[in-house]
Image (cartoon, rainbow, N blue to C red):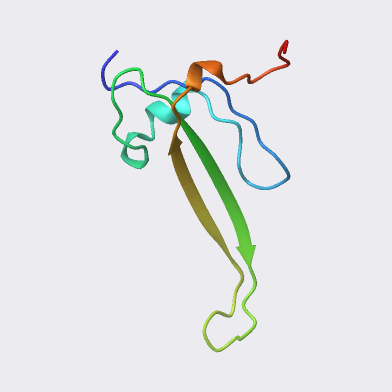
Length: 86
């Protein structure tokens, strides 16, 4: 349906504040998602890195740097998210 986003697969690697995404998460996050054509699929890689400043003159407290990268792929239906048969 137009204007809706759906999660096909989501996995968290490592430790930190991120959780696996679900449809409710992306429905509430429209302003942070790209505008896409109906049926288009993208890969989202989201990271959080803790930054401890070397120089206390600028930043005294540590803080998190969050990044989000969206990649449009040509052959999304061919991606295997779980164990696949070759």
